[in-house]
Image: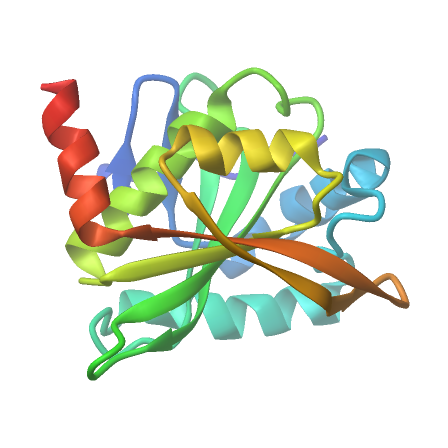
Length: 198
């Protein structure tokens, strides 16, 4: 699977021990599309990432523009890459960002094979939430997960998200309406959890 070009330090937005986050870019197309193809079984009925050049171009247009003016962005996307070889690990997208009295967004995400299950997405999620609450200045991040997607639920619960409800036939994925568990994380909860880690 092709890997993207090394990332100049000026483009890195958030760096952890094993992964870093950066905005997606058009030059990721070959590596991204190869990762989507290789991850078909992993994504299964859970998610439909952009799998064609046209859909990837649309994704870039929507999620990469937030880097220009983060406090006015309605969408912000990040790819998660390994620090040791720059391989694409997964994606975190903040969408439908509402400002004014809300300061909220929806979080979507998916991992790529063979990086799922090794804790890299958990590290990436911590970096993404740091970007959401520090750079994007959000107050609330909501995520919606299909109830049978236990790995995804464990990921967000491990980051401190709390269940707020259950949405019947919430999103149409792969041609069928799917129920979702609704969870959220507030800025004050995130700050409190960060203080406990010190």
